[in-house]
Length: 331
Image (tube, rainbow, N blue to C red; front, side):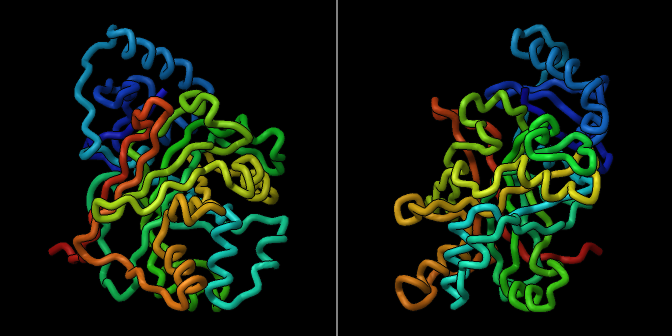
């Protein structure tokens, strides 16, 4: 099943069930007005949404309309909690080596790196990334993510899979100029992590077939910057699975329904062959192997596209397709 959200004049948008090829959709507002409400009542609404998806696939659904990715909101336009990890140790190793730090501490740690980002407002999947200055070193970060139903405190990884209801793609937008300062202060991200973007649709794990195993997505993430392929690293190299992330986060708290988890920048040991999913990693590789970073950060007018395909070459989540623009305060 594939779910999306379209604008309807409310902050949370209208929940829709989307066809397998993403060409058409049908409103699910009679079942749940929006995805956040659906996640809060998942056990009750999931069978009804699945039935509606079956009707859409069989051509029996009423009031079907064309699904336009360019007009869709993020599946969750806002939520109670957005938690991002940094779960590809190859990425951590490269970043540490490039800055002269010993990567051993991060590589040997039994705990995943994790932060809570802003979740009150997410970018549209296709539209503008609006930020104030190029000097803030604008970067993209291609990730895989999951959406959870309510997770009890103390949940262990062995049981956490039952709370993973949806999977999606993520562009975790970053402003790298603030990273060193905010890491040094040590109290978490603020300026370095503005709004995040998610793919046009979120899908149930069964949509991925065998590519969803061990709590990881074993498929390449295609990242295209200004029309040129930047990287296609595989999500299967996560050092911590999503169930392990859930266990870590739920140790002292429950996780509200609609909580979003990110994998962190997808990164592979074979980066020379598959490339990277963020500029900072590419610059780190250049520092290590060429004695200095050469790749610039994003400029206003730059475009970024992220997409994942199945074995038949068909898009799974639709495309994150955005343009970086300068923020202008509304009159």
